[in-house]
Image (cartoon, rainbow, N blue to C red; front, side, top):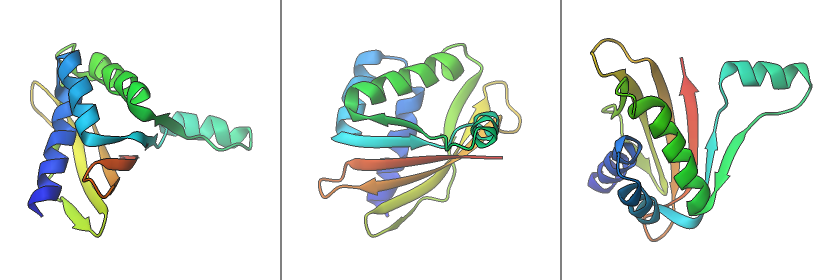
Length: 137
């Protein structure tokens, strides 16, 4: 369990990290070179896709795309000083899968502005090879 907790803590810390070089290093340490991050799109996107009879999935592949994804989330939510990401106390590991929830917390306090379920498939070297992120109400 300690490895799963450590992985979850490092994962969440990455999304709050202000320094681009430290984020780059953390991405290299956390994910395999060919890792895939798959994000469940917001409800509006899913509804628009359904109206067109198509599926909608947001996906990044590899370290460079992950760097852009994390930087965009940081710039949008954390850098303005409005939110910070926090892990919940529900980390669990089963075989090569680690799951936990995280919340986007207003820096001024209060209820989460958003939540997500992380479902990580870990490679033999302990790094993430598949990262499924589900947005939760």
